[in-house]
Length: 211
Image 1 (tube, rainbow, N blue to C red):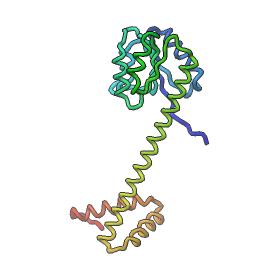
Image 2 (image 1 turned 135 degrees about the horizontal axis):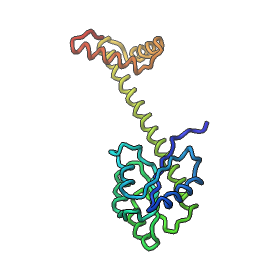
Image 3 (image 1 turned 45 degrees about the vertical axis):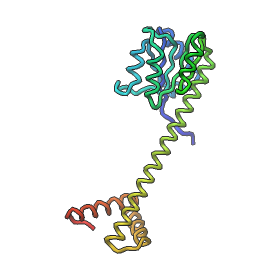
Image 4 (image 1 turned 45 degrees about the horizontal axis):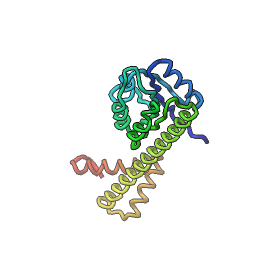
């Protein structure tokens, strides 16, 4: 079964509305419309307001900028925004005479630099690569969260077993069997049973009815 990923958010920025529209038009060759949510900007202020976490907006996954913008934004501001974001990837389209210098400055960031006039095909390939990279990062995050949940569950179960051994004089095997049987009989997870045992032990320790 093909996995369904969330929509990739792209912010297209250029000096004029026509320039931003040209980027949007090029993006139509990258992925189906429902897989890309594209917004536009013409100034660095608009870009910043849509990227920074305090803006209240859902930040973009990919930033595409054709420099310079309407307010002659400096490259430093763009590099700073990308560096501060844990997810943002960017494509910068710059003048040919600035390409080497800007490419060097972007070498340690997830930024793809294109020399103007940029070929639509190259930009599209860069966006496809970034979408795939973003999905891999999302998959990795989900796996990390799954492992954390599993380790947390193991921790609760282990603690509950220790409490059963301590307060009910069970062997480790008996405690293990008790958790499994209770979970099966009550149609709940072993973690839920473990949490009940832990809560009961804490209640006993504070003078409330417990184990």
